[in-house]
Image (cartoon, rainbow, N blue to C red):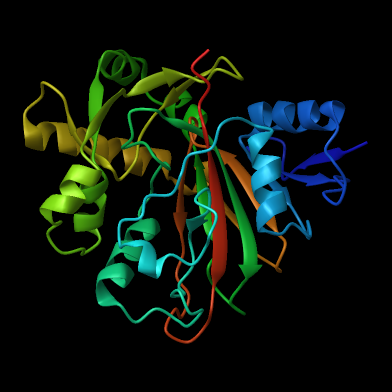
Length: 287
């Protein structure tokens, strides 16, 4: 029997206790985890003991998995499993990254974003597992996009309802200081369009679908659309709508729902401390 403990009465983050990841997850436990995700959007599991294969196997219970793009070539990939996204600061040999292009790419993770919003097939859940955490810093912050929509004025809700945003990976990376993407990079990750206001399928609540990847509003003047997106992100990330998850130890797992949250990495001394984080990403069901 698992216990779901919300952080506070109005919170969208909960600790989940009592899941034994050393054994197959039974249907009742899986159903309880999914229900907790629908209710809270971010769930924290401490000291899971998961390794890479078990991490992937558990993630598959939640749906089909996205494969990590090899944007920098196979020679720099740290993992044999294509389902694992590298969210750390290490190179293929396990040393702290020195490649400035890759370091610039990673800086985009510090912007408020939604995983894979730049893809035609959206993601539902991300499952981020700690393998090594720095002694200080490196928290992950989350914003509740259902509460963000709910707290908009009625006029602004009405304005946003029909709008379509273009999401482009390289837009957010350029904002974070990444150099101009190559033609190969542009071809690998072209822009994609998604509705700005969505209905979250689990809770049936309306939510903003935003990210630093959102480069413009379709059919609006460029600067006016970007100003609206900036204002909405600032509205959604007011302190009362944000919670910060501290990574305490190897084995900590955080699952979040990309369809109704944004998140960002926070700073740590990434030239001194190792941070080994591995993520799986679940495709949204097309049903």
